[in-house]
Length: 399
Length: 197
Image (tube, rainbow over all chains, first blue to last red; front, side, top):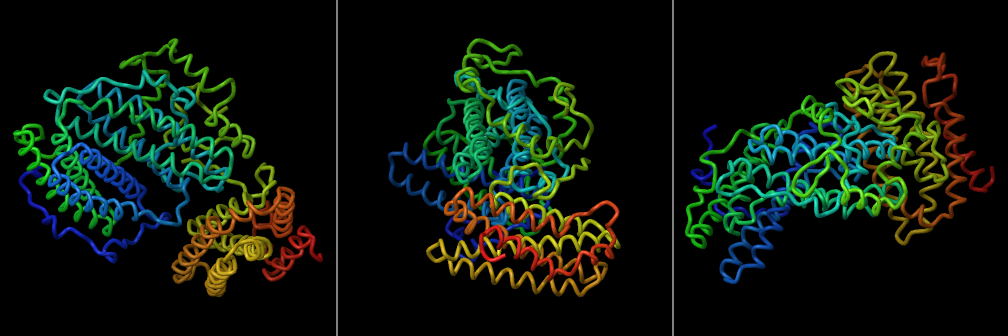
């Protein structure tokens, strides 16, 4: 690929503001859309939410009022981008349907990133995390059939399998063991920085989503399941954010954010099957190019460094939503029984892990187990989508 | 690909102590039947469509008898909410009547079915968001359970799912016209609500 965002010019910032009619986008049809179109929308919403929150934190740490104003101008446009992207989701979708789509994102985005990640320690972090998202998808899919009598298959459409991953009950680790070691900003492949930022943002949005929509449910099992998985999203954000080198300056981080947005909008523009959605990705790419230039100017001014020195010379291969079934089955076969110890991974339950497990479960089955038990008693079976055969782990096959 | 069958509300083993949970599951059953009609052709499609029409009739009648009157009386501004739902139901019924005049293999059938599906789905979500919470909040548990039993009874009297051996359209016709189905549903629900049966 020859596309280099540093050499392209986008739409001037003062021409980026959209009026109400331009913001009023037509949502996708949940029964007819490409599931990966919905995944791209959910991903870019997470990316824009992170852009907005990061910019707010930066502004709170900025003394110069003129710089604050510059950040505010770009951020307002980013807030409009978030509105356009997230409003592509349809009002007729239920919270649980959107939740299942969030988990499909978590599974196929994290699995793809793990496959492409050049650094073995980072790759392990994604491989570890994806087996947990995979299990969450299975738990929510069972809840969905109980409450709405619909199959998750109608959402994921056979692109992603639905079956047990690492059992959710084992995701509750002592917070001490959720902190990873960071990559080294000067030594790491620039692609690794983009991967980390992308997965961290997606998980953060998932955390925000569950913590806010969970209590909207009236069914006790639904309320409890969102509470449990919501707490695991907290662990995941801790896990992924600790991979970022804290030695990156604020301005360097800002440049990385803007560069990543260019990378993702470009990637999704290349793959998008829905022409109306593709037009949004293309427009937003042209906006982001300008945001990147503004960020680069700020970095040059405040850090006295050339942004090109921390970025890739050109965009990496496009980030792709595609099935990762074979890869996931391999992980299910080999990494189910891992947990974390300090910044590493072990197969044995250690003292800190066991103590946390004992305290959080309080001697009863967690909601993630109860949802499967309740589903079984309602339908006499579980809900799974196993397109490629039996579960690779014999212990996880349906009895 | 998995071929898991989701039973209709009333046929699963849920306790059915809450009419709202039951109606929500019926919303899913209706969507599943739309899928079935879209995915089939010929005789199979005709049969799936008959079942869809019957389930819609039972379900909408039950809601007209239970949910809407409750929302109208219990909610500030409930009148407007209910009027909106009734307008949607009228529109859906018109599209349904249109469809009923067509052969299910007519090229105009699928586009019209898609329109009906969109209308029905929007209507169902509006009920779930604007009416069901009030019903759950306002009605006591005994009432919610009794109403669930009534809807179940109504559906049982009007088979809307394939029964071994009687899957032909002729057999479906023998079950009686949709209007009779609506009447029977009303009777069952009114009895359960303690009105004149």
